[in-house]
Image 1: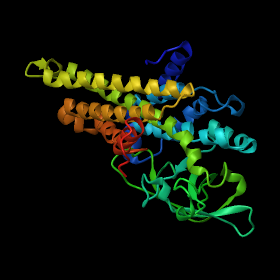
Image 2 (image 1 turned 135 degrees about the horizontal axis):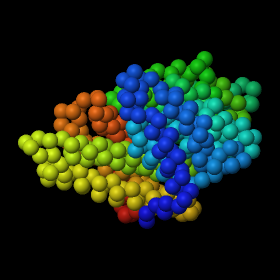
Image 3 (image 1 turned 45 degrees about the horizontal axis):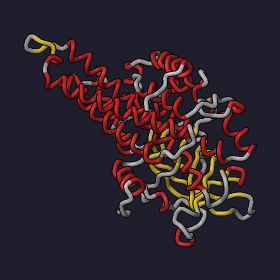
Image 4 (image 1 turned 180 degrees about the vertical axis):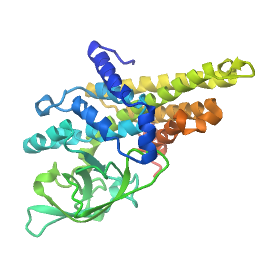
Length: 390
């Protein structure tokens, strides 16, 4: 299934492309080197109204589907900012979906408009240092306060993007110990609350890539949260989060394809211009064939992205397809970026040509939000019916 490029979708793509073109490789290179958050880019996206692409119209959004959101994020991924640009707005696109589906009327009216306008910035606090992908074993606890009208949260979270700048966070906690639950997925509760630095210490994690967008460890000590900040019923947080999992897989896959496409275009342009031994290096099959293979791999992954998006927007099951899209796109994009660096040779290793930045950043979709191995587990068990391996 290919993407049907309707006039509306063509307008979305053109508008996003125009916005992204205002922020070139030099801008993103400087942000990466300085570890400086791209506030100008994020403000431009918010001002243009794109943060609300999937939000209901009554709250200032455009009420479009995951297909349009994926088209938007793929266009951002194919821009000079690659993953860093995506990461500045990624959470605001998919994370509020849990509030749209499970929040009450008061929560929707108070939470969603500031997110759409870019006045609030949220981080997504799920991962923990000792649990990793085993979300059922998180230990961050939310206990009832003495007045019985709220909770107190204690614990640690790891790899939380944008927490240096966020003023809000969506956080998954345990309200019932796992040993007291019938199923390990029970007993977890989701909150959308203030990231109050009186109770939350935010420590930045220095890392290989995506220097412009911070990743952090959170140390939470006695954070008070009123009942009104709980999303959905107590103990149902894990199940509520499931509504956001497939959209996130699809968005990450679309972003990865975009990054791969940008790297491939850079490599092909260089291969046409670079002359060695009296001929452009693109004449050599050792250069041309790997790039041609990357084009095919990216196109195949892209088809799975739009297939998964179409299934989701039509209300059909898409777990296998969303996971497959993320797996295939991340691998294809990584190979494209690796080949781009090797096509440029020594200059591919130089910051001024930018492909080394693309390669550093494209490693993230292979790891997050779920590993390749967990996707293989999902497909082998849920699609092929093989016995569970863990």
